[in-house]
Image 1 (cartoon, rainbow over the protein chains, first blue to last red):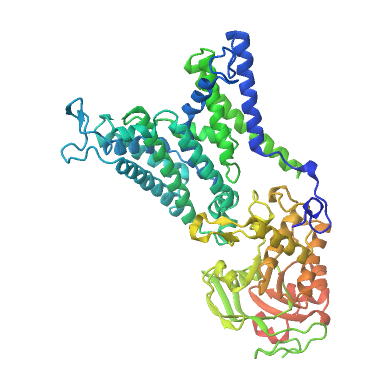
Image 2 (cartoon, one colour; image 1 turned 180 degrees about the horizontal axis):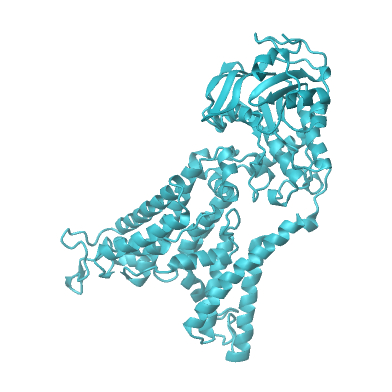
Length: 359
Length: 277
């Protein structure tokens, strides 16, 4: 199609000056600003660079170790945030993902245990009597993903078909799934996974899994009917329904995908830690929501992207690393994290109002 | 019988200005009760291919109720509807849309955060790789090209089709909603107060689109309170009063005052005398 002189239709010219900067660009600028602040503080207080290789240890410009830590520590919650992002884009919220991580980690790990530890029977074995030990790695993975599928599916059915607010539906799942995590072994940790299970979350694998899933869902949200309908529902649910989109069924799909992504995070986390505990994933749901919000996902639905969430996750990682770098205590991190979440939403609302005034 | 009565046998009667085709939509005894409220009583209505008909009446006269019955938004209490030569019983608005009835609702059914092609094709996207089910790939290029064609066809002026709806004026939004009906070769378009919230220029633009539809022979039911607009645009005016049709007027044989008399109840056509009782 010819460009129509800046693709105006019917003789109107398109005014490029009125074009909005994409929200992701603003978030990216924020990321660079935060890095710059830590860089500056580094020179003023610590007398060393935050991101760059000032000591010449790595034969490269960057301090690779810090870069790796920044992304590694947010990769697992980042996986959850990919699902939470989709839920928030529909105008919903998912509070259950942290608990789904706990329950899934416990259940999946029990199918990934070895028979013997140092020549003795596995002291933490859950299914020793049944002989379900030393199973191929596919078994705990499938079991884990099924856990996420069921939990997310229940969330979706509740939100889609009972019309209760997503906040309540997923709050119920948050409490119940945590209950499942505790009930599974009556509070006992599940440990000693097989080597192949332990390999899933080893080294930088969580980062690779996070980035591959991020690219996958970026493409899905941008180029498929699923993505378009997810945005449409969040933007105007009545219009989506009138346009023939099966809103209920779509919501079930979105929440199910979010549940499955939480399960992926659970498998990676329990593999990385070589153990599963009933308290795993507490508060992860809020961290995931925070990543999405910092990344420019509107809680009103309809706006935001996976790219934004990934950058939001990186901002998270930079802040945590930065505070460690400045040798500040962890509680300062939390205080600042909270302020940044609120600040991100305030900025976003301001931007929206400005955009609305301009139109 | 009145001279403006339209034959019930389904044959076209020659008209002065436009050659009208066969009946596209006909209702007989269409009735809707909400509990004890008789919102619509025994409506006999007809529209032919290429014909533009206005529905007028006071608030609560039954205009919107009538539209909700023929578009399947609500289920009628009783009565019969024929559309495109077949007896129909729409289960919902989608069903009606699939059959070829496109409705531009008073509250615009647009997704604010999506752009023009996205909205035009919402719920019926052009796709590739359909074996992927819900994850089938959107054919953005084809949808954009069809959008530009549709906008040109209807004469809609939009500076940039890739702009999201939230950045558009009320008139542009209305035009997008109307262009949407024109994109899909609907057999009948229904517009419920399309210019109620628009400024002078924007109203003119919407009216131009309606004229374009007329030139292309697309039938239209227009609900409007704007007498000037109705007199400008349509072939025939059907007046509703307290849930009943009280007049069926050809534009050439009436004027604004006359129509107002029917709307307010000062007059009733002989053919509908029993209705007004």
